[in-house]
Amino acid sequence: MFDCCRDTNAILRATRFRKTLTAAVSAVIVAACTSAPPTIDQSGEVTFDGLYPVANSKSDEAWARPGIDISQYNKILLQGAGIEFRPGGESGKTWSARSRGGPYEVTERQKEALSSIIAEAFVKALAESEHFELTNTPGPDVLLVRGKLLDVVSYVPPETTGVRDAVFISKVGEATLVLELRDSITETILARAVDRRAAEASTGIGLQESNRVRNASEVRRLAQVWARRLREQLDTYGAPNP
Image (cartoon, rainbow, N blue to C red; front, top):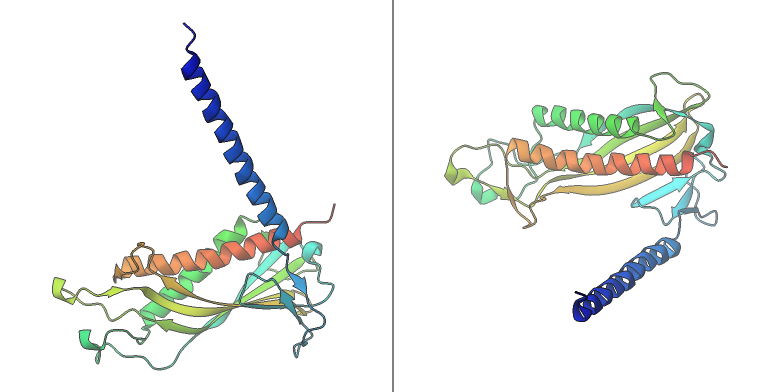
């Protein structure tokens, strides 16, 4: 039998759903339209190598050469320029629970692990690019992407054993990433971006117990954020004009 009340309630729910969906879609469209795209400010101060500041960049700071066009490239040569660590920091010999907080001395094992994690994240992300393929050889259609980590700081204390020695930290460390886009033949610089971020605890409560596996996971998550953002930007501006 036809239930008038039930049918009316269903219509009301459907109407509310359509209104909610329409509002959500409108909000996304408005946000997309009001979000200003990156632009090169040629009225700004030029760098020593001929780059101008980029307004509305997703990085802390960015510069680019006027008239830059990376759609002429379809391959990427990924090149690491090294990792620099902030000098100082407490060593394992002087560390104690009373001096907790850091920064701490970065061990050779930690340096090797960081280098491996960063390289793996960028290679994996760029291999998923829609417009570029990775190569090991320079060429007229090859874009050189050079990356370097500066002022790397560790807040990870030396590893300890025993329940009483458990240490909880809010962030593993922080670093400044410098990315440069260059022509692979002439090495003419096309753009540079600088971004400083921290590898923070992702537990949702602000603190997590420090251990090798969890700390590496947080560093990997930060590296993936950087790498994914680079790939997205390259795919956006590297797509050939229709």
